[in-house]
Image (cartoon, rainbow, N blue to C red; front, side, top):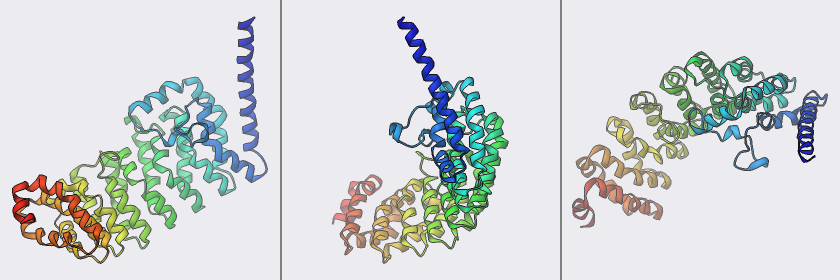
Length: 380
């Protein structure tokens, strides 16, 4: 009798789940926009639950796990493909995808923006199946990027890298679909609305990682000049930050030194001369990531030297930390002839944090020049 009870309770759990799914569908078709908006808001976690994907780090109360996955490649991709069986894919396709499509096409932009943001979770719940995603998610991504409402475009732009990487388009057979996603992304980078451009720009490093040097060169690099000259300081600030992320190996490993010198170097040169210290600091504080290339960046080096006299003490602080890296890139003789005097001035700057930065840069300088040099030139 025990086993009978178990099987009955098992059945009733499935029945309950089925009832809940029908309720969710009914709510998604409710006449009241606020109710449909509520289903849109919960759609990402709902589709992940139907596909039996695990919770994220914060458990049931946290956001969708699609945002936490590190894909393509690696253990997360393997796990998704293992958990989401063909039966589960079919169930998502038959039961949840029509809800997703209807909400993405809702007359209210407040509903559409919620639904289109769930596109990454829908891709994961379809098991990163490029064929299915091409049929049902790609059209929604394209429509969202061209939506008449800037709020929809902005919501999609904010999550674009998560959405793009969750469709299985990184498979070599799906190159055409991935190119198509990059075309939509390129449109968002050129959007007339500052909020949309700003959200899109923040995804550049992760999109470069997904698309590799080829798609970066084709769809992102041609837009960097106009973005670097953007009238809005917040766009330039976000671009400066994401460009340095393109040079951070924990975020992006696909861009070669040649691409960095060809496409990113002009941006660095511009941003180091920006009128706003905030923009300059995004570059300066992370410039050590390209130390190996500084001997091929004359204008960048000249800007750093000029900035030792900057009014803003935070800029002088960042420069103080950076100068020892120039010794590494350009050699001890260069440092001694061109930089030692300015570095010594910074060592006695009126702001304590600038002096501290010089001291914090000492180990780097020591590793480049050797202790005898430091004793002779600095200590004496």
